[in-house]
Amino acid sequence: MSVRSSKIIGMCLCVLTFKAFAGEASIPHAEFPQSPFWSKKEETYEKMLKERSIFVSVKTVKNPHPQFKGAEQLQILGAGIVNKHRGRSFQVLKQFDKWSEIHEVIVQSTWTPETHRLFLHMKAFNYMAKMIMKVEVKTEKDMDTIYMHVQEGAFKGMRVAFRLKDAKSRKTEISMTAQYEFDKLPMPRFFIEFGLEVIFQKIAEKTRSHIEQS
Image 1 (spheres, rainbow, N blue to C red):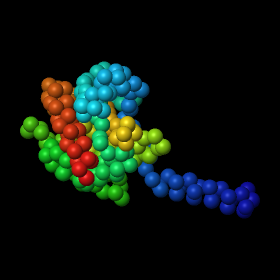
Image 2: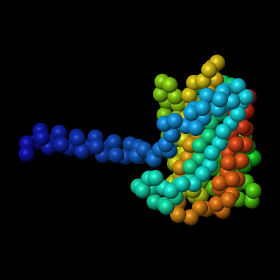
Image 3: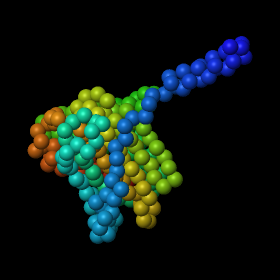
Image 4: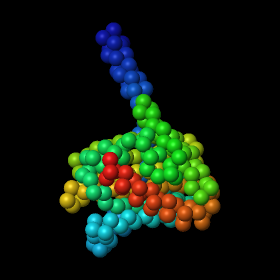
């Protein structure tokens, strides 16, 4: 092998090594349904737009993704309309260190921008959950998305996403989805399927107020 070839190969290896250590691999992304329930019926979306209704669904189903360990999957889905344009709504929602100001359920929120990690301490009805989440933010022409993946703590492996889309009259449609595969839930099933729906409903209402008043 010539000296020139050796130098070229060496440079390529250096570049590949730099790329490997320059950043971490992308986190698993939560999936939004192609046709979410609030968009299937015109009257449902009109309630969101005109009556400020917020819809939340929490259920458990047979795990549809065998690549993730667990016999069942917890699915959380919800949406509402915020009376702020998408740019401002996105700017406020990205202030992760202020999430603890939104609702008393969020006891602590500590954001570390250098590692893109968020520590959340949540407490409701004598149940507590502490999580470390890796965060990715994606901005596109017609929407903004915040992806989260629980890497340590309660609900480890859960994938969460918030999606912001333009709505009528310079408003913003904010939807949220989460998937968590499990064999055994970290909390009683009754609380997960019924308590979480109430909790997320209240957090969504407070989040909307937080964005609109900021």
